[in-house]
Image (cartoon, rainbow, N blue to C red; front, top):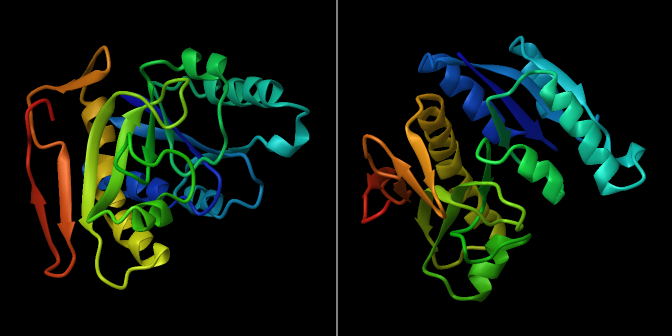
Length: 224
């Protein structure tokens, strides 16, 4: 039984999807805690209503990033996590914190990395004239929005899309893809080989949502 600790900053819709998938699919895991860096994070109420321990480590109470990260790591480690899951956690983490959880911390980023790291990814994709856009699940490394890719999802960019419409379409795929990637970790099926992730036995690590027809297509390319 693996312990998962999920970090959020706001609503935590990906956290909700993970909690539901863990219960519905009977993972050999438990959500040991949901921790937020903001006391008003709406996702805390959802977690508590599902019997999950919650905690707040308010970044505003610490003089610098290093001291906040030290306090956050202490809170996380109190739950003996096998995996730390960033689910809309809006803080840049120090190298020491990331190294402490090397190989056991996942993030989901709303772009097809390595394109568009950082913020405002949906508007950046529109400004660049992208025809597809998406999200990436990856192991966290000290470089922001970088690390071995576990899975990616993509959606079409449609005529008339604005950033909000595109974000909503991408988020729909995240709620499917992120729990799936975490389940692979729980099942011991992910292995790191440098910058590449191997999934054994292999299955598609790519999700495409064509919401015009409400269909999902999966393809597994070489090294997927």
